[in-house]
Length: 379
Image 1 (cartoon, rainbow, N blue to C red):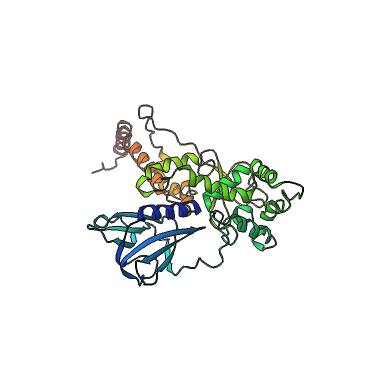
Image 2: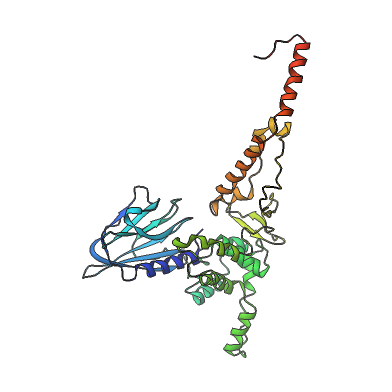
């Protein structure tokens, strides 16, 4: 799911691929896009982008006296931008800006799940706090001076998703930040953050000494800045839509989120938090912590199909009503259906490959028994 690093990288991508490119005409919108029509048309204009937290602002600047047009995007769960030939538009391209070239290209806002949206104007969404990336000092002060807010009565894992204070932090970032500090996700937020008020405030310390202490002992608010920066600096093309194979680099970077061996619970908002160790005193009642299993690498020669038992054949619906798997629970955090489908196909293949001899022998015994009792043979 796009969080502040992805929005930042999307803005960087737009500025790189659209630098020097001239666009022309109106803005095309799909019939199902979650945003208004864009009343803008120009014979020649340029496009630039800037991000803040979980929002991205696109500026359409005419090459002339006309006024520019701004749009502010939220990416939802699957939003992204892509520059491609206009004759080969990707699926789910809900907003399109055409270049003045021949043949033209199109900068597209692509959103398969349609949770993303845009609005007209240059104003960032009201109620969002300073960005954890670009406005770190203001972000830190905003949190520490408002610790009396009821938002900090909640567990720290839930407080970290409050965009009024943690603008840009999302589900995978909160897991990585808490994991590195070994903070239980369901510890009270105020308890965790109040300890930072007086940290490194010794007036006798020189600024260089304070900076050294901060680097050697980063606190939670610092990691809200440095952990997203790691994603941004890890690979220039990490989230470039033309280099989607680099997603493997992102998965290798993760230390906690969706990592085998980690535990998970759902918070009170229904979002899954990944962690290691104890969940903390404010963990939801009635849930048991589940660990993500290590996925076995397939060895075709070592796999032996299992013969389905009578119980499994007799109760297929009961199995369907079993508690949801961890992968299914992650629907709110990202697409997980592919793996489940893969497992179902493997199961089906195993069932189809069962030997037929035992089944036929069983049927013949049943037929003999019915004949012995005078029952009519099956047709």
